[in-house]
Image 1 (cartoon, rainbow, N blue to C red):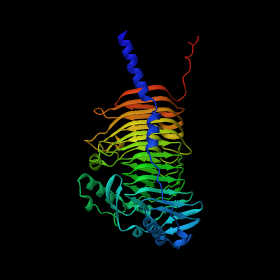
Image 2: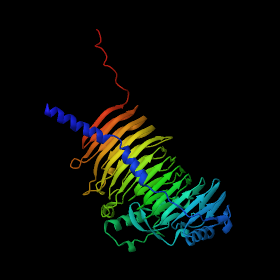
Image 3: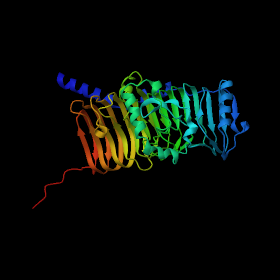
Image 4: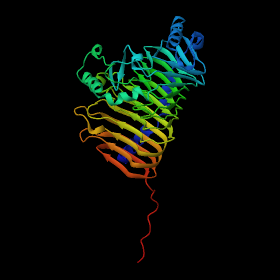
Length: 449
């Protein structure tokens, strides 16, 4: 009798751990602080900006930022019109860039306009490169708000960089692996590494709300080494190469909600540095990230990896659905070059239409690497529906000597799939009420001859 009781207790504990931890989500959201701004306001038109889509308004926007700095912060108002800016916007603390309805900021696509180089990160490696189009470094209390549009003009010159980026990309990875000092990692001109559209780097108390993001050169919204971040109500149409929607990297306490994605790559890609450099930063994993009430459209919905070498933990995804094509719904990807960990991921109430793969977890992404296998554990999926997976319903791929562990799949229905379930090198996988393909009913009676 004691044994039965003990077994019941252990199973009930496991079941409780698998429940979506709403209290934990609430505590993260409560801890995130929205930015606050002084009353000072400046309208760019009053500083000489012209919303005629031709005039270069760089000087007017720079002057507005300088006036805000002088007044210890404030709001920069961008009224209706199309404002060409030949070069980046560099934030200072305590500033809200408010792009009003009918207003569009249209950046130039001349790479020279984004020099001198700034300290940034490119696919998980810290280096000096072209400035992101909107760049905030070591700022507190900053926001981009309003119902206007930011256009990165990424479809021409920047798009052409993709075919040329190989040598620069490989050099950046060599610098990472060989611990080249940061001051010597100068890429920029001649290396063809495209800049991010918006990057918050070492910032705190950030809000991006209701704006529309279009035509980014590279990643759209990069949350780098920043914390206390709210992204809500924004929308996208950005279909160039590598146009991830939101990339939290070494980011902490992040709320992403009510976002309408339409991206040429991942909608949300949670990252935490690449390889040696990432593993040296295990004190700052990406953690406490809440993604809810979003509409997915693009390559993949929510991705963790593949650059996640400092670790990713405490990710909560709920109440999201697709509004168009998605290759994969939820995608955890790492390989034996990365190391680090992915743990404590909870996903619930997801509605997918047609995908290639519904849920995909792999420790062997692209079959690359050796020596640094990642630790993937405590991953929980519940209440997920999918109309059709043209390839696989659920894929779990660990290594024989480094298994993915403690996975729960509960209340999942995938109505049609070419391959139902592929589960290799995983342990303690709990499957409850999972239906892939047509649901079985009562067994038929023995036929009469």
